[in-house]
Length: 382
Image 1: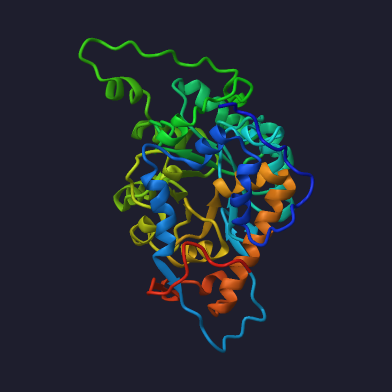
Image 2: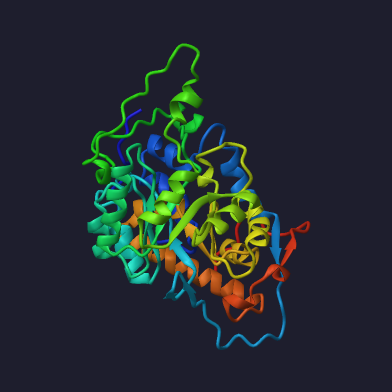
């Protein structure tokens, strides 16, 4: 199967886009099948990918009557910065898979729509170039490198480029493409590289002694441990967030350790297949860390109604991963910006009909377990 995009990104918004999720429906026209299988998939049989979506369908939103929302807005403060809305672009690797300019286009969209952006260590564009285009809330997602000096250099580059936080991912030491992506023949193209790691020597395959495990003594040998986190907390002046938290005991430990905030995430289903849905884990994590501690949610958000449910269950904001990539593939920066605009309007419509004038009004009481006859996985288009 040839790995070529069926159609290049457009320089305009295509007709028929009515809601943010329409970009997902259009994506197969713009992303070659093997690449799409990789982007849409997770790991294993994609059980956790499916669970992320089902978790939103498990909740209904209560409509409320006679509420005055005429002064409504979606403003919030996050990480000491004022934001117009709680919709952030997630750290998605190798965005050049779907657009020649990759993360540069996503950064332009974030700046235009006042959205926060978290850049992946595995970006296909230099972190300095992305920072120059992104808005004021730009954070750097970090993977620990096998050599601590390389990790430190990445952190210092992020500091110098004006990133406002380090978001370290701890749940993805082993990543294997889903069986669907493997069956589709996906291979990373030679010209799509993690350019921010190009200057660092890459670890060679670890020699295993007889009887050693390829997983425990091999793949997990350089996995981050508690001493790595403690070192990072002391190595940067930036606030450190941890991405990949699902268990409340981990959340309590990380807060006590001095981590600034958490991203409740199962890595979009790309880590442990069979892990709980991010949304399902969110209430217990919120209860563990208390009401004032910063929490983001990543995984499965496809509509403003989904974002509302995440906020109701304890998130301060949400990260958009696959939806970002689909919009980027269809229409570049314009598509990502349009997707963000639609998603914000969907969130506003849900808030208005639920009687919530501000994000502070959104809470667990706004939701009910889905009843027979409730809508499907996503809120309808506005």
